[in-house]
Image 1 (tube, rainbow, N blue to C red):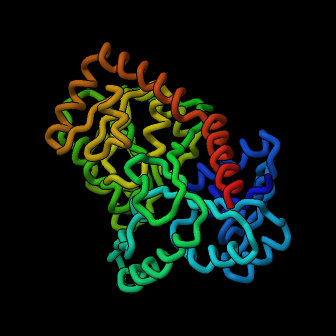
Image 2 (image 1 turned 30 degrees about the horizontal axis):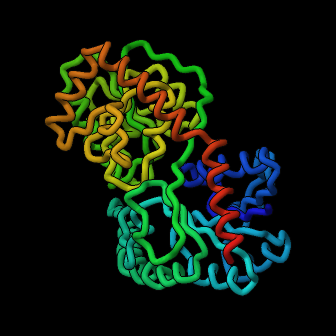
Length: 359
């Protein structure tokens, strides 16, 4: 089947949905399908084996891509941005439209703007504009769900929360290839893009409270300038080290040498970093979020709930090597069973064929 994947590309924007779409495209190609990646706002030559169509997303550009590639399926993983008119176009041209719900934002009728940045006059004005206009754009595009032919969700909590059927749970997948990494001291690691809903300051507070002889590594791209002090090393504890942005392969290498992953982000989708940690045989300590109850259900980490408990839980897991080992072994088994790229891409194609046959 010819599948037109619509999202930004990970070589332009390194985020969870972009990584997933790249994995899906690669495995569709290996399975003998014909994936075309519509890289929204893409401008470069992409170092991948599958075909990439970089373009701004508009009525004209989407019609042009449909005329050029004649896809059987559009697999949409670009939030609700421009969803209504894009779904209308696919309906008109008879292209089956599969929407992938990847975060809690996808479920909201009105939406909200979370990336508040008041670090300068320009960012303040931009924040105020988006905070006022984004909810209305989200509400208009919410009507696009009426035109969707099928929905995949990465978390069972998302099932049947948007008005489109049929729906199925297909978890995200991650690859387990690693890059070499060395660090002198035992360490824990935090990985996410730095913005308010990821709560990076909580991890720094954790490092500051720690009495343990370990280092606290942070990996991620600063997406909100209120966190520039982290990049500049201002008023951060001596046991804290900011490594900047890393590729998934590099992150895997860091996780493999870590004691465990610390997660302070608000609940959002599933959290691919959990999957990466588990694939590296590492438990996860989470401040707020237990994705699909995997941590508690499989006993592969700890969900703390508040900073005081997070500090205590971190000390426990750091000092009890045998507990870390048992949790890590279970985590690896869980990850291999549930988050395998080939298996989950096959599940996606099974669902797509089912939906396509019923239209």
